[in-house]
Image (cartoon, rainbow, N blue to C red; front, side, top):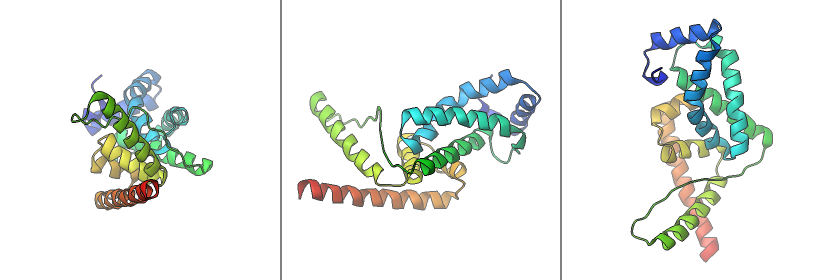
Length: 191
């Protein structure tokens, strides 16, 4: 089966119709194909692997039972990622707890030796965690999606149901705010 995002709308709608008619195996292929990205979307909001894995599973259950409502206005993947994003935001609202955990964040710097690079990377990760912890989950999702997961403005706009210009403005404002937060934290640490 070729990648669903490469399919034409007609092909995608045809496959979805087959799933709605009971082809569970085909839906399982959708799950396998989209699981990594759904988990990435959810982790971009939750930043907790265990919660993210649980919500990602719930996303596919909800998608399966909501598939009959899929109209094809956007691609299946965008529709699915929007469900993932909304469910993750709902989870954050339920918990009312803000925390951050970053795994495997790589910030390479070839000018520094390996040991110094490891210490510098750890320091940068710590600073990034402090800053990301200060912003809202939806802002954190946008920053992680754009700068770490390298999603396009268009894709972020579709997932968050915002206009592309709004996403650009929000990213700019979030980046500026993160710079201010980092500067304040550095002044407290070294001032």
